[in-house]
Amino acid sequence: MPLDDANWPTIEVDETTEILIRARGFLERGWCRNTLARDADGNAIKPISERAVAWCAIGAVDATRMPWDTGVKPALLRLEAAIGGEPINEFNDHQETLGPVLAAFDRAIRSAASSASW
Image 1: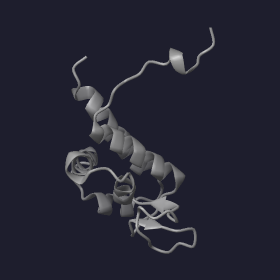
Image 2 (image 1 turned 60 degrees about the vertical axis):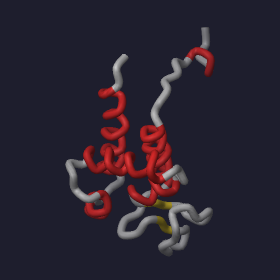
Image 3 (image 1 turned 90 degrees about the vertical axis):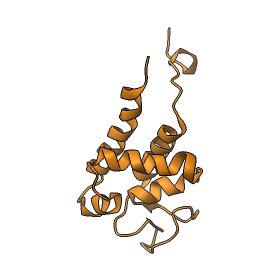
Image 4 (image 1 turned 180 degrees about the horizontal axis):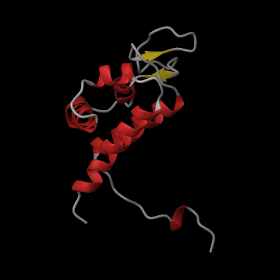
């Protein structure tokens, strides 16, 4: 039987994990350093701008437009824990490539699964 959407298991995730997953998607589209977001010309802009084409780790979380208290703040705390407590902006800006940033998001996302009781 071919796989389709009906054959894939569904896993419910909490709001914090959803934000981290969505933010990771922004980073996969484009990544930047030294500012929250950039447009196609390399200018610094707001992460929620429709002209944004690249985001830093914090800007990507901000771009999800989720509620601060219930999702964004816990997502940033979980991400900071996943990078060992270093400030997120410093961690992001010290990287030469996107790989370590995505790996940090992956660890933060997985941390929810490891604490869930199945």
